[in-house]
Image 1 (cartoon, one colour):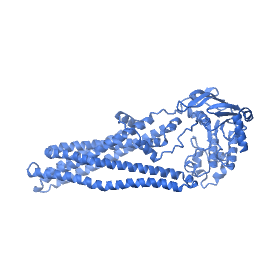
Image 2 (cartoon, one colour; image 1 turned 60 degrees about the horizontal axis):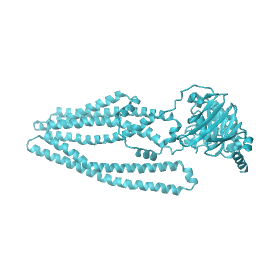
Image 3 (tube, helix red, strand yellow; image 1 turned 90 degrees about the vertical axis):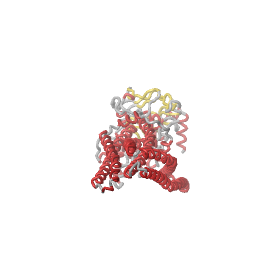
Image 4 (cartoon, rainbow, N blue to C red; image 1 turned 30 degrees about the vertical axis):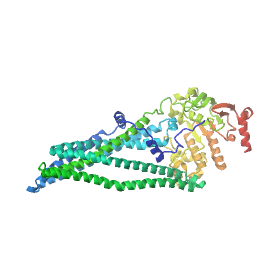
Length: 599
């Protein structure tokens, strides 16, 4: 069975697909060596990281000093207010806040630098991966690796690790200073805080579960909305508005039910957590007052201890979230590393060879996509310079796979492709592909202007006169001149603002501008109306002059003048010759001709 390679046509990167991908990934243990190796590949600005960490540490150390300074201040109120001490405490707080803010800003810049370089590296890798990779991996997964996984790596390196570092320092420092001030109350606090956290943990986990359900439901709804709005013409032409509305209504209802549960949880969560915290603080205050009444400690010490308690309460959840981020980053690191380790196409590896005037030959080519099912078997053909070679046969026979091998998207399992007697795999991909022009039945158009699409992939600057000339050759000048912005008219995503015939003629104009030595036409007029087909066919006839041309055609009337026709069935060449020769020698070809004549 014939398969079409390439990243298009796979439901392209919807949010629901990305979330499903992430949700179904196995949990992986984080390899620090792998993580830091990935970070090193981004060539980060270590200076920013160091400055951010140092600023955060200094700010934390200053913050630890404030409760110690408060204790003697409170105890000395009976002798009057020490204005200098109060001013010093305020200065310490302000300096600590400024250092923390500076640390966050510098680490944020560091993180953005890391994720920019990482995304650039991943994107550059993706576009250099072979087509076979895109046959096996969904584009939604690729998009998720590029956007979500790289963001998760940034979150860990720029936020979670520095924050955990300073919070551990704050936690340990607070406990040490608390022990120095009053070990009994310290012991009570060290016991009370984990107990309260254990009580809150199931509640937080339940909230996290609801949050995931809401995200999944929202992603499903967004995916359906994206799919439906993207195919709005199909919905309207099929009178499927009711069906689309019902499908969306089901997801909206599911989202509503999750939202109700989330609203109930949010309503209960805050009072329950507040009650737990107040009970803990009240209990510790009561114990502190008891210690004051027994002259074990002073009021100033109690106030200082309560300030340290706030540090403990703030540090514990931060550390808990760090481990959550660590678990997320483990999978993200593995997935990003996996794609960066994939073998990629090397465009400049090999010779630069001029293929003009040379014979293209396929010799005994076998091919399989998965190593099991044979797609092509012992396929041989020859294309002499400036000749027209056509491939005909039933759908799924392997014709488009032959074109994929000619463009070197795939490598034959056995046999070889040669040009002028030289193996094609010894020619650099850049040199080979730069000399091939390809026009398909659904020629790809990028979102952008007509000018952008004409020059896509080409180096150098092209004048307006050159662009108008190739548009004229492709019978496209008239309709482009009637557009509001002419060459700078936006064609929309996948060229939705122009007709199929207009897209084809722009693709042909692009091929004229490319001036290929070898031209490949894959059902280039198959999906057009009669008027558009006539104009496109005339443009193609002009384009084929003086070039080696290979054509895939189901409409046999378009290849009757071909120099050689190869009939492909089940991955094999079952007949070859000129049109009249095949009618006489190949019963199935003759049947196809007869059916099309009758139709």
